[in-house]
Amino acid sequence: MTVPEPAFALAPERKKAASATPPPRPAGRWKPWLAFGVIAVITAVTLSPQVGIAFSFDAIVRNWQNGAAKIVQLLQPDWSFFPRTIPPMLETLEMAVIATAVSTVIALPLSLWAARLTNPNWVGRGLVRVILNVVRAVPELLYAAILVAMVGVGALPGILALVLFNVGIIVKLVSEAIESNDAGPLEAGRAAGGTQAQINRAVALPDVWPSFVNQVLYVLELNVRSGTVLGLVGAGGIGLLIDAVRTYFRYDQLSVIILEVLVVVILLELVSSAIRKRLV
Amino acid sequence: MTQHTAEVGAVAPASAPWSIRMRDVSVRYPNGVVALKSISMDIEPGEMVSVVGLSGSGKSSLIRTINGLVPITSGQLTVGGHSLAEAKGRELRRLRGEVGMIFQGFNLAGRTSVLNNVLVGRLAHTPTWRTLLGLHTAADKQIAFDALERVGILAKAWDRASSLSGGQQQRVAIARALSQEPHLVLADEPVASLDPPTAHAVMRDLRRINTELGITVLTNLHLVDLAREYGTRLIGLRAGEVVYDGSVDDATDAVFEEIYGRSIRAEDVLDR
Image 1: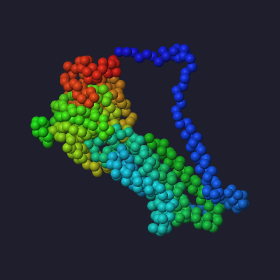
Image 2: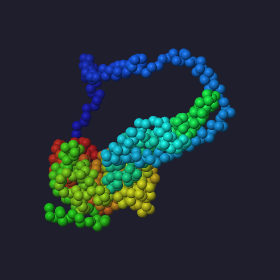
Image 3: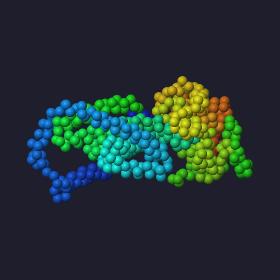
Image 4: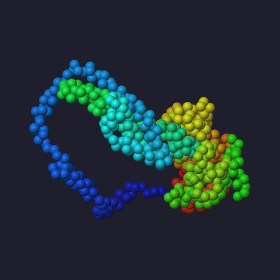
């Protein structure tokens, strides 16, 4: 049995040595500078009037009086308008809740099918991933605009647009959370003779549940925020009212709506972060 | 070979311990690594076998071929009279359901209760819809409670698995294997993550499974003293080949040095 030499025995040795030669620095230190250079060139090109987008800051100087008048109006909210904002605001909240609930039900199995650990079949997994990448590529406002044309004006196209948007987000984030989990418990389920569905339900789900609930709450927050603008394309909620008052230049009324949205979003964030803290 | 083929298809009675018959079993992984080279051995029902070898010797692959977690490349393997090479899908799952397995890392679902983890052992005996709805039968729950009682941690049934100590978690894992009502228990380095007193307690639990319930137990170990103390038979693996197969009593230090291909060191024993 050999006793390992204690580490401090090396110290006097080090004192005697002349000056330590550091190992050669790793190559490739020029890479960050190259990246910086590329970004600078792209920025310069986009700003150039020949290739880039045409804009100039003098628009601000030319129109500032216009803008100042709007700001003055916005700073004087018309509180008598408040009661009229409540029903559409409630509609936005209802749309957000319904869309979250529906997408939760759809996203849970899809999340399990999109992760390698819970779906060893690469064909099915690849199919789910490709479809969801396509779904995620389209912004929710565009979905809403198309769906309004398909199913008519109202809350329904708004809810459908939010569901598409939510499923894409939840499945991506939750399936990534599954991949980062330990594979050991799943192997134990396989060794006990469970089917993949049984293993996913009994072993994978409990471990992924907190991150799933976390993403669902996050998506609910997003829904309230994006739900406010879906009405601009006719997809229900407070956005319809925003569109109406904006058309009549009633910025005093618009500011009531903006403040209301602000309060609702902050309250929702407080509640959901309180719930999230309890998730472990 | 004829004696071996005669056994295929013969179904052992429900509670009887299972035998393991290996004939020229080889395992080659898709990356080209050959883990097992033409292994032949017979393990009789009710034996308590220690499989020893250094890490990389193939003992983990060996134990995983027995419940089909690692498919064999060639050779014949029958467990309890059932041929592993031909078992697929439902048949393979049914076979796995009869064989309990214990892992080095416990492999519990940490965020759910101890009881739910033990009930994982009932998966092979539960219809999928029941599992999906989380509806466990009263009989299954009773089996799980009995298994927890046997390893002495029934009081922790409702606790979160991750809140338990390492030794307790390994006992939950043993209870999970016992709730399968297995004919054979495989343990892959069951005490490598535990401190010495806990390691002995867990090894005693495994020995009780063998002596009191009569279940065949196959344990992978790398520690010389544990293999000597808790096994009755020793199988030594080196580089995917069986280099020793005999009684523990005949396994002198020289035998272990032959298995390890080097002299016995301090790290090869638990109690120094």
